[in-house]
Length: 340
Length: 294
Image (cartoon, rainbow over all chains, first blue to last red; front, top):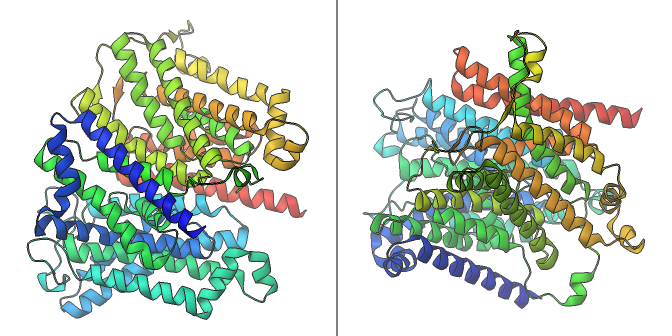
């Protein structure tokens, strides 16, 4: 079963590659050159390679965030809002402090708490009033995307900027770069460390055990003496905090300030990252890398030969459509009653 | 003033309510199709593009209906035949279409921004001959052909639920394996409900794009998600879904008005439908809960 699942992932990746190659051939005036830049471009030099790794960082965090919610059997559709709004609030808070360490600390704490709050409220509505969590998280998230836009365009806009953005954070607040010409920063290592941390917590800690039990069967968990509501609230808040941290680290590491629309759908792609890794925290940095690879390939191809970078969204959509599909099922299994 | 606001509410409610009814067909069989936003967006593009090329709004509408049916059916097939999680597939379709329409518009039309189709055929408009523009007849006048079709579609959805087919859809939603044991062809029923969803979403998309004769990649602007909220809140009753959609349409119209006529920042105005929807959903939730308890 395990090997079939891996085979299924390989088919997903292969179809994604095939589809992107086909569509690139169709839309590009110079197909061969485009294909080369799309597939090989991210590895062609240190700059592109580092940027690809850097663009996987937000996906690692949002993927981990999605995974934490999934691992307690909950869905967090508000990752986009938590990511975006959390990072904006964190940046605004950090701008008030001159000391680098304090400023960095404040940024992380404020963003994480803002993100946690945005997912805590819908989770509370679910627990108290059994309000559909999909609708709740999504709506609250979207509302705060707009609020974030407002903050960037209104009260906290840098008057000297040509577009909606905050002032730049001090150079010494930003995260250290690793591969100098590119924008890769230490946030990447932090992300990978968090992946493994969550893997061990999920596998070997009491909380992880409770998460797994709640996910498997909430009623059994309740009978077992686990406070199911509490676990749900913890999972959702943690999920929101992680998503927001991802946004903040992206700001600290790459952009240096919060810019309108910098999230680029990272929240939704994070869900794909988690599912592609079959919700295994220790694999999320790899699936995030794969999705970031598609993104950077498309971006490089659009730089080098004129192709629209939106091809990446198209391919990511295909990946999302296929990640949960199971391609090697026996007939018997397929016909079994399932309403899942 | 109020009449005008109500009139624009109806116009902005129609795309939402048709999409919501489409989604409610799939909600009814227990497999909510969340690709509504993407399906509408694709229909927006296809309808204006084909209408412009073939110089006929009707062919544009037809093409939009066909393309969104295909999209909707592929969501269902991925779920049925490859056991994909229907929710994730829907999310994927939304992402896929948001990329696809930009790809299409930049390769076919050479632009990624707002595209105006100046030569697009005008939709016929129903005008009631009336001298007064502020009376109650202002509410009933000036509907274009698509809006009339949408109103018919709303009535049709109410009618469908009275037919054996509608009841079978409900039965499948209530308990799939019992429905199967009763001899219902669950697959056919599910596929037809997804086709219906595609048709309604296609109509909703054309309703957004064809009257304006333009296309932007952010055209649907979360209307698909509002439609999903309406479908979930309205439950099995088409009239309930329509009622919730009317409230949402009012919220959207209000948000446009706030943007145009007050100093409310546009970002806040954009979020008004969302906030209102959330509150409606919460109140509705609280009411149904207390009814169940009482």
